[in-house]
Length: 99
Image 1 (spheres, rainbow, N blue to C red):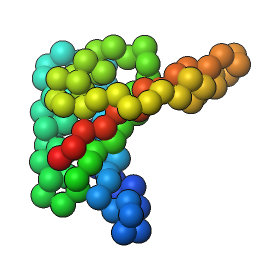
Image 2 (image 1 turned 30 degrees about the vertical axis):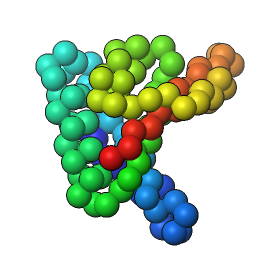
Image 3 (image 1 turned 90 degrees about the vertical axis):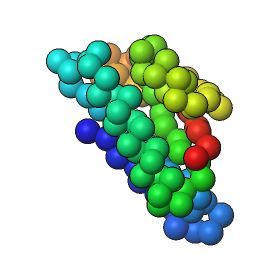
Image 4 (image 1 turned 60 degrees about the vertical axis):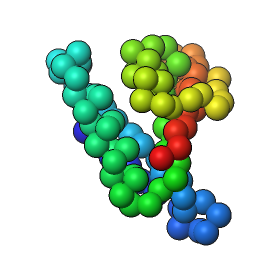
């Protein structure tokens, strides 16, 4: 599953889109992530967006490596983005790519 969504319609931010992707673990390593990311980038370009943004769990090195290989760069980090049931926090890496 993958898709892009507008950050907002206001003139100041309508050039930005958020990208989300999720692949069932049984299908990892088949090139689906890259193919879906490329399709989303093309869709964003066709829709007139100038910037795509995404968040990734800091420990998901495979995903971050894929995003970097497709031109995304880290611009921030949220150290307490997720609080697990046991009260521990997980960090998110904030990434962006110009279209």
